[in-house]
Length: 349
Ligand code: EPU
Image (cartoon, rainbow, N blue to C red; front, side, top):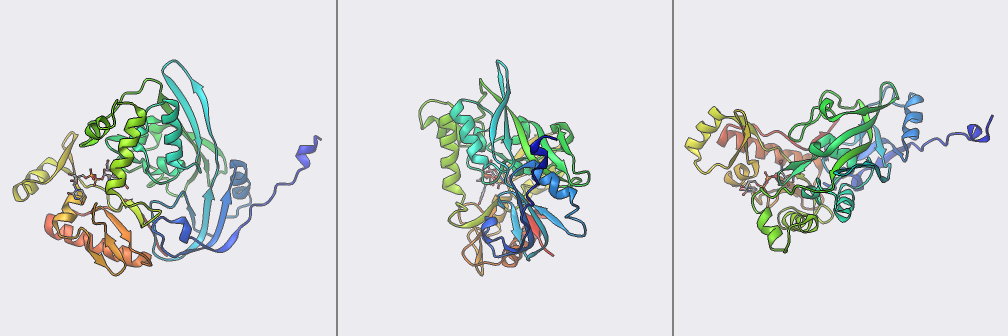
């Protein structure tokens, strides 16, 4: 028998009553009854093989940038912190980059832009991890990550087996994927392979982007990244300074008949055709129209630059932020007859 077969697996450490304050960008106080971090996929397989989840709820944590803890979490938090970014394949036009789930999303964007590989530059500065980018199908300034995902590598919680999921199976849509609905809790994403372009097509059609890039001189990946970062920094609060989770709500998608009815009452209602009979509305505009931009309830507030973002002014509880969000939803429903859907995942008992 070769000697490496004799090396015992080091059991991952299961922590109890683990504080999550630094693991959610809303910076609310919460704790997990149990917490395990993983640094490799073998650790995950080993952990699942020991049936350690039996009888417990679980939550897979990324960078905590799309979560609101309303209570302590009474189950097991699984935290894949797998690291590494490697080129796994290339041809004349494309380059396939495999990034491990625990990598910081924006570090991957910076790496791609520095190397001259296009496809994710419009997604610069989005907080979060690479694993969560696929769960959430992150999007910004006219592009979505699904368009460059070649495959998602994951471990099935039921079978403890490694699986590879192709994008057409993942149910990607606007801030949606099967990882959020029919597969919720079924997989731990370990890596995502992105197919990037050596000769990028730039997407500059989102209002304000082209002008911001041109102000920086030539149009290239670096200037696009710098322009996007500056647009985001102007509008969106920095989670390192003020607790928030980006857009709290999704922009509602409605049909043409509903749109016509609304436009009669609100002729300046911003709306964007999605194809077919579908139109996207700007939830931030509606919240602002209801007079809620910049309003606080206790220590939770609607951001004063971007009404779609709720912020923790310091010391807010998850429940306070949830209550604020419910009041915002209520006023939008009363005024526009539109029900806002949360983008943020609320974790409660
Ligand atoms: N608007 C207002 N008032 C506001 C906010 C927005 O009138 O307080 C209007 C704007 O003037 C504009 C429209 O609403 O006419 C759209 O605003 P913006 O371009 O800021 O984008 P958004 O629809 O509010 C979405 C994403 C953001 C993404 C931006 C840019 C969702 C839920 N949010 O916001 O994503 O950065 O577009 O692409 O789709 C996130 O998901 O966390 C996020 C920040």
